Length: 179
Image (cartoon, rainbow, N blue to C red; front, top):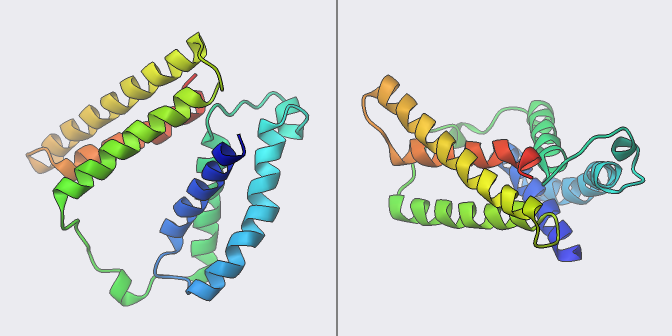
């Protein structure tokens, strides 16, 4: 359980890092991480996931980290990016992926791991866990296909990058309500 929670905390920081890449130096990041984990993430996680937390008492349910991970990291990344300022010019250039096969392998590993998170969240083998796995796959596949259709409509052809963007969107979208 402790490892499971540490991984959630690490994922949240990785999402924030994406917003601050090229904006913040490493020393500032090393100061930001423990402060944000202590004063933002821990309080949010406790108040939602602990049965005695004040948000849990108000009836807020976060199945697999939609609020605690995605919403908190999104708000933190957006806010931090606003206050830190724009990226350096060299980091604003377009950087398409240079190895589509590795990108596909990473996307497959991400989908598989995300299924484990959502399916493992009930901490038991149950109908709830089974539905979480099924819902994760259905939502992710649907999002991937819709993104491919949008690629065809707007660019005239489907793309691997678009498919992976659609896959990630589906994974993020289903997480709070997978079960």
